[in-house]
Amino acid sequence: MLVKNCMTPSPQTVGPQEDVQSAFHLLKKHNFHQVPVVKDGEIVGIATDRDLRVGLLKTGLTVGEIMTPNPVTLFDDVHLEVAARIVLKRKFNAIPVVNHENELVGIITSHDIIERLLGRSEAHEEPTRARVEIPAGVVFEDVLKTFQMSSDKLLSFIKSEEDGSYTFWLRDCDFDKVERNLKEHGLDGVKVTIFS
Image 1: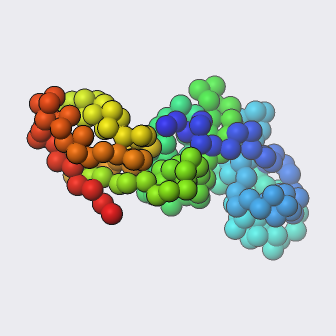
Image 2: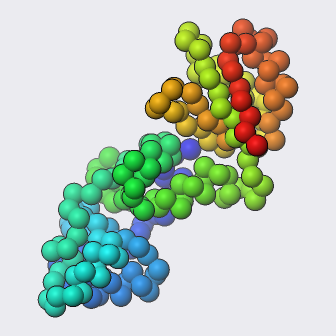
């Protein structure tokens, strides 16, 4: 799943010369927690509600004076798991999304990421989570195909940086069929642990 399929497209923005009070009212009006700062079509910063609250303590400040400049951004064609890792590691609430011309095209929040990884956007039922350990020499794509053939839907997957195992989120997966298919394709060294 790509970031562009999960983000909020064409988000509200402010310019660096806008006064802090106006920007703060914009956030409150739309119930945002941060707003991208754009100049000449390119993102130059991000202003959070905390930044703006602090800025309100002094009169006459502009957004450009209180924003975080040169924010971390994501390309719209990266996988959702990349966004999830950045949000987790950097403790961000949102990340601006750009195209390869560095134009702001969207914003993705931690809530968007969690919702998609849990599959809540497509169904209210909780997906099954499985830990998949793939031994050396086994091609990941072959294992992935086996799960796709044995499930109603493979919602998402993520690789652990600690031990190299994968976590798969699946809907209506026949794990007996997974086991049979793994053996039939010579992939019986793959270890699957199902989490309740």
